[in-house]
Structures are given as C-alpha cells and as structure tokens.
Amino acid sequence: MHMIQRSWKIGGIALLAYVFWTTFTVPLGPGLLELRNLERAAVVDGLDRKVAAYELIGLGTHWATRPEDLSVVLRKKENLTSLPVVEVIDDTHAVIGLAIPDTLPSRSWDVLINHPVDGTLFLQNGLFLNGVSVDETATWPALTLTEFPADLPHHFPFQPRIFETIRNLMLHVPMWFTMFLLMGIAFVASIRQLSQTSGGSSLFDLRAEASVQVGMVFGVLGLLTGSLWARYTWGAWWVDDPQLNGALVTVLVYAGYLILRGSVEDERLKARLSAVYNLFAFVILMILLMVLPRFTESLHPGKGGNPGFNSYDLDSSLRAVFYPAVLGWMLLGTWMYRIRLQATQLNQKLHRLNDQ
Amino acid sequence: MMLNTLFQANPIEGFFFGSGKSMVVGGVAVIIIVGLGLWMWRMEKRIQQLDESASQHTDSPNESAEA
Image (cartoon, rainbow over all chains, first blue to last red; front, side, top):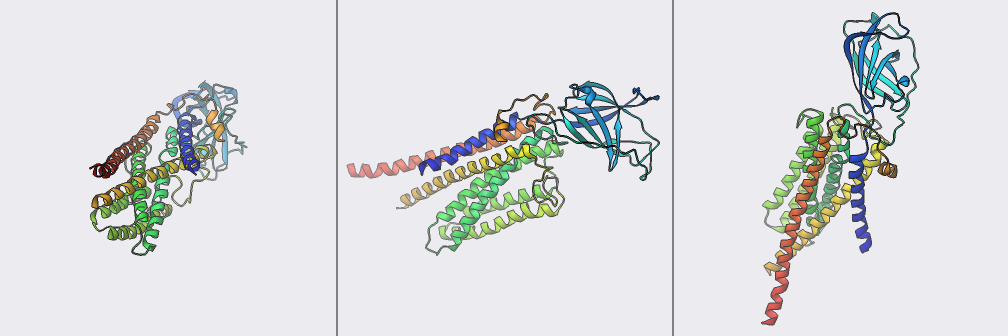
C-alpha cells in the first residue's frame, strides 16, 4: 500500500521531468515567414523576358540541401501556378521569379513550397499583389501538387505568430487542467459535506478548502503565464477575450470562497455556507471556461465553436508531450492537495488540543 | 512515440532561439517554478510551526508526569 502511494508520486515526478526535458529540447519544425518584393527584376532560364524578383524567407528550413528540388507554388482555391526558383541563397533564403499576367482571379495568394527535407510548407495569404486587374472567372493552367511530410526527426509543428512559444502548451495549459481537477475534488467534497447529517465530521469541508487553496495556486499561475504568452503572441498583456475574462472571473469567484470561509466564526455554519457557495462556484467555472468560449469568437485555439483540440491545434508530436504534461501536473497538484490537507488537519487537531 | 521524443538527436538549425521568442517560454517556466517554489516554502514553514506546536503538546504531559 505504501509502495502504491509512493509510486504515483514518483510517476508524477518522472512525467514532469520528461515534459521539461522534451519541452526545451525538441526542435521546432520548419516554416515559411515571408515572401517579399525585392523591387528589382530577375532573369529566369527559359523565359525570354525579365520577371519580378521576390525573396522567400523560411525559418528552420533546409533549402541549401538539394536546392534543385525546391519548388514554389502559388494557390488560390483550385488555381495553382508554379514559380521559378532563381537562386537559393542559403537554408532559409531563396529568390523567386514572379511573372504576373495582366488579369488574375485574385490579389491574395497562398504560398506553398515542396522540399525533400522540409516537406510541404504553407504560408496563408503570403502574396498580395497591387496594381493587377481581378477577374474571378480567370483561371490558370491546372497543376497537380503532391503534399508530403518533412523528412526530419520528431519536431514541434511550426505555427505562424506562435513559433517557439508553442512549447508553452506543455506549461501553461496544464495549469488550467490541474485547476479543473482540484476544483472538481472540492465540488465532490462539498456535495458530500452537504449530504452529511448535521453531526457529521468536517473532513469533507477540510478537503474542499485544501483543494480550492491549491487550485487557486494553479489558477493564478495560469493567469500569469497566459498573460505573458499573450503579450508576445497577441501584442497585449490582456485582450478582451471570453476565455481570458472567464478565467479571471473564475479565479475571483474562488477567492470569494476563501474570503467567505475567513469571515464566518462558527465552524458548522462555515462548512455549510462554503459548501453551498462552492457548488455555485464550480458551475460558474464550467460555464465561463468550458461552455461560453465555445459559443463566442475567441483567440484561443480550440475555441470559437471547436469542441476541443483538433488536428490543426494539436498534432501527434505535441500530443506525445502534452498528454504526459497534463497527467504529470495533475499528479503534482494532487500531491500538493494532500500535503495541504494534512497540514490543515494537523492544525485543526492542535487547535482542539489548545481549546482543551 | 514518447521514447522517440526523449532520445532523438537534434539536427535542426536555429533550434530554440531561431524565432527570438524563446525567452517567453523561459519566462513562463520561471513563473511556474517560482510560484510553486513559493508555495512549497510557505508550506514548509507552516508545517515546521505545526511540528513545533505538536512537540510542545507532547512535551507538556511528560513535564506534568515528572512533576
């Protein structure tokens, strides 16, 4: 029995060690940053006229390896056209020639590249052309594009704007999952507290208190880390997002729970009042963090009508670290809750002894 | 998958510092470690206090017995 109690703690520590190691050592996959106009002409083999030169910039790409196999394609719906590669400067820079017809089906184009090492990379609306006439019925010759994955070892997916901060998924998001678990423990404890007869013990009340106290630690850490991440991804410490506002309100509601407990002297009244409050607090948590963000537009991935992390938000390379991270942080949270509960129980026992 | 992730070599250039946003990840990790560290330090102090109070209680019956 003692071994079982110890093994889940050791398991939690091992999972968190794995999570920290992989979070900081697994590399970020390649991606496209920009296609910018060099404001000069370029000569392309096989073309009898000069074309506009554009510089394609990548991050973590390997274009200098087999540069002859780099291919660049513009795409708008079914319209695809191949662009000639004028020169591969280095792994992350290449000059592309762009021969623009007078009439195009659109001004805005997605840029795709195919490379044997980097696979198929995609830059949404990577090219915007001014000074061309648009005819939506105009079509370009059909081209077949075969997409293939990168020939690289395990790496985190490249996402525009997020870049390296995708690693925060293993640190920031599990804070909230752990808080949900602890507030869930408090919710169950409060129900059991209320279902007791009036002469029952206060064990469930202490459990609810301890788990809310530890849950608040994770909630505050979730707010702080989320705010820092938002500053560098969305450009502000706090944005008017239903998920962010809901998280703040939830933490304040649970702060109210702790204030309520501190303001009632009578132990039995305190236990019943705070248990009732806790039931409402948990319902508010579910509504504000799990329900409302899915009905409104949100900057958070997995929100705005999306019921969970889908293949775009969370690919298999992230899952291999994210799920152990959630489990590891939850085990740590449960361990902290047990320590807190034991300290509270000991404190109560000493108070009783003092009173005697 | 987890073992593959753990033991792989790392050949991608510009690793971690490539986009200039790696400090955000470091900052987030520091906030969590400092936050949990503060909690543990407070709990350590609290448990120490409780321990002292408990030992005072266990000492006093002995003193009365000796008397």
